[in-house]
Image 1 (cartoon, rainbow, N blue to C red):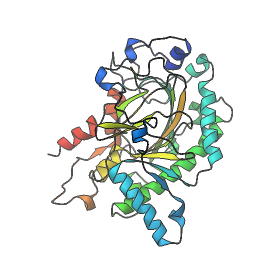
Image 2 (image 1 turned 180 degrees about the vertical axis):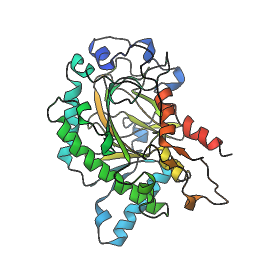
Image 3 (image 1 turned 90 degrees about the horizontal axis):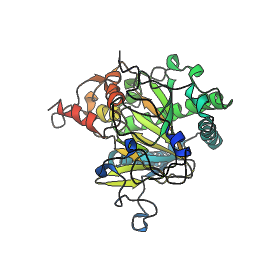
Length: 366
C-alpha cells in the first residue's frame, strides 16, 4: 500500500486569493529559476511564423463506419499521433457538447464560491482528494500558480460523492455523467492504441485491470490571472505518471504547452475537442514505442483559466511492464515491473519533475 505524508510541509496559500488581492508582483515562492521560465522561443499561435504548428487533430466520426478504409485511416492518424507527438485532439468523439460545457460551468461556479466554503474541502497529501494548491511535499519547493480540485471516479469503490462539492447544486450530477462518458471514451482510445501496437484490442484495457477495476481521477485545474506571467508557471514541466489523460481545455484562454524537441508549442484547442496524451504507464506497456511527453502550463495576465483533466490509470496494485509481444532480442524490455501505486508515489512526494521518473526506470534495465 502506498504511503505518503499526512500533512503539507508549509501553510497552504490559495493562489486564487493571492490573485484577487490585487498584488502587482508575485511572492518569491512562485518565481521559477531563469531556465524554467516561459521564454521568447516558445511557439505560440500569436507568432505568425509558427502559426501552422499545432498538435494533430483527429476526427473520430468514421470509427463506427462500416467503411473499413475510412476506419483504417482514423487508426493510422491515431498511430502517427501517438508515435510522433504523444499528444492529439479528438473531435466527433461521441460526448455531448452541452455536457462538456456544463462540466466547465459547474467548476467555474465552484471556484467562484467564497474561500471559506472551499476550505471545508481542503485536501492533504495522503490522497490529494479535495481542494488543493500544491503538488509534492518538499519543503521550500518553488510552487506553481494554480489551485485545483481532485476527485476519484474509478473504480466505483473509491468514488465518494460526499467528498465532491455540494455546491453548485448541479455539480455532483453533472460530473457523475461527465465522468461516465469520458471513461467510455478512454476505453475506446485504449482499444485503438492496442490495435495499432499489434496487440489484441483488449490488451491495454486488461492491463489496466478491466472496465470495472481501472483507475480514473479528475483534477480540475484553476489557473488564476497572474501579474507576472513571465516569471512563473501554472504547472511545471512533467509527463503524466498514469496511463492516459483526457483533457477538456478552456475555450477562451490557451495555456497548455507541449515539448517538441527543444521547443514548447502552445496548444490551440479546437472547439468541442478533447486533448489526449500518453502517460508513463502506456510508455512502459508499449516498451517505449509510444512515449509520454513533457508538458507545462503558462498563465495569463488578465484572464483566469479552468481545465478538466481525467487521468485514466491502471488499477493501482497491478504490475505494469512491457507487453511480451513488444519485447524482442533487438528491443529488450526497457522497464522493470512496478505497480502504479509504487510509481505514483514519486510525483506525490516530489511534485512535477519533467520525465525524470520514467527515464530513471529505463536505466534500471541497462
